[in-house]
Image (cartoon, rainbow, N blue to C red; front, top):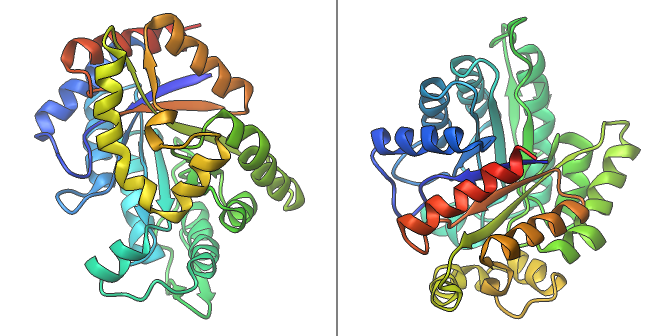
Length: 309
């Protein structure tokens, strides 16, 4: 199992030099990957490209870019630039976003999200694999009069993952993507709902077993009670979003903070094993800075040790 961390947040973005420094620290600790959310302050594929180029050997990814307000041709060019800059170490994460974000920020109606996701992925896959597209759907069109790009022999096509947790999104992701990026979906939700659904869809489509990259809020700390209070405040907004509400409920938790992995090294390591046993192929820790710098370093040290086996 590989382990990674998220760097920065959608509400607070570090200077790029600080982000690179932290990414280098993560790599030196033995972590496999660093992931970046999309915000209004910076472009996550560009940041991933910079970090991946500055920290050789570290896998980098976006978690995740909403498909509303984007177009497959532009996302493909961003992803292929990041893939070229990192020598094949970039992972593209996509998301449906939320109704509030889509309608308030972009002024777009949040209509037929699953249909848009299907068409977006259908147009995007050939762009990433061959540099060409000739797609005419109900919700979008993507055509290339000439090849946009062709992946070089020294790097693979960009892997595509979707922040999917609901049944329909999981079905589309299994059919058309390389895996999923569930957040606030505990081991029970993974084992009983997410992994079986996306795996069955991938098998039915003749695709290989999907990656299950579980994003988990987690901190190694001696002040579990205090950090959990901070987690409850930081994660409360997700309790108002239907997709996360369902994932939290299916996980057997009442609050989002109930899914945060907080405690000493033994407790956190045991929870990582639970995610692996539930079907996660990769675990990415988020919110590792909730307890301060000492706890973050302690958390990364443990994750690096676990990643090395």
